[in-house]
Length: 553
Image (cartoon, rainbow, N blue to C red):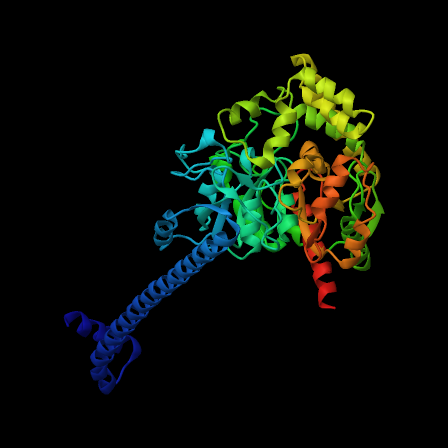
């Protein structure tokens, strides 16, 4: 009070206040103090109310996320009852949901994600459909599963694969056969067939698969969804189990599968983050380039409708040529491109390279196992003695030179020197292919995607159809597939006159396998140069846009 009086005297002397004004000063000061206290109390109350609202909103949001995940678990259960596509349900997702509270929201916050059988999740098997890996739970999460969790995604199921992963079928003795959601008599493709079937049937909205020779792209094409194989090592492969460790003929890659291209891009954007670069320093620290993906600049696009090794059926050709026309109408430049020596490259570099050990690695993985019927043809040609392979080669040569040449290359390499020579030849082919690409001044490429889905049991007999996909694993080009059409009655009529390459056993088997497929999905494949993954995704989104626009019209 003494302070107030002293202040009042100073104000009277300084400002020549009247006695009445002087008497009012203590009251004004007291009112000011009260108002200040009131405002601070109101501010604190507002702040506490905001906190409480944020907590309530977070609780509601978490409840919504939990509901979404639970709904997808129920959906996945219903889908797998029909298709047999899920191998494991991951109850830990409930704990992860609770732990999301209070954490920074990642790009995949609350999104349920399915993962392929061979992607390690702590406490669960990564079987590859093999007895050898059954009841051998992973001791820790793969790097990609760790990054998914850090980005807020909820891994909730693991999905089925073919035995050994080396098939476009999806069947193994442990979990049985997965069927195509569009036609249960057909395969969903492999080896990421469980993912393709689950996503296409609505049991998941985003999944991770792996691709060594089309294992993401074939199931995506067969099931009518989108799938993307990035450049090898763009995403971490630590904690991913494979069937042929050590082979260097082709590059495997992990990639996303979803019902639209934007979901693929979102997944890549989320995974290409500092967390992955720290967890796996062998991955180049290259974030997702949104500027390239979002560009609207017209593209110079190469195309071909046949690789001149496996002659496509009428529906595969039509899918490419219709897409070409739509892209031209959208303002892009389309130029023909001739793929380089597909047959000799497939036999001498890919098949010979992947069986460089004479099939011993595959045989060791299958030792003591029950052999799935869809794998028996592949196992036979890989494990038959070299002498018998030579006899088989000579026997087949007059009747089917294409098949005989493939059999000849299954013998493996004879020395380390020969293996190194093969590695050199692979690099030389990659350089030549890139030179041809640059000479044509291409930005990107479209070409056929295998389709439609084959009747179950047929895909395992025509593994040479891999030529359209596995060539880009050899080249290490990013590649993806986008559904663009369905099989028509006219396609089915045209199939009757299909003779393929030379009407050999492979051609006749393929013709039977794809017959009766009216209404089933057809896709095209989109390709870019190494490390131009965003440009490949951009082409995929453009293909998706122009084909969807046509459907609306």
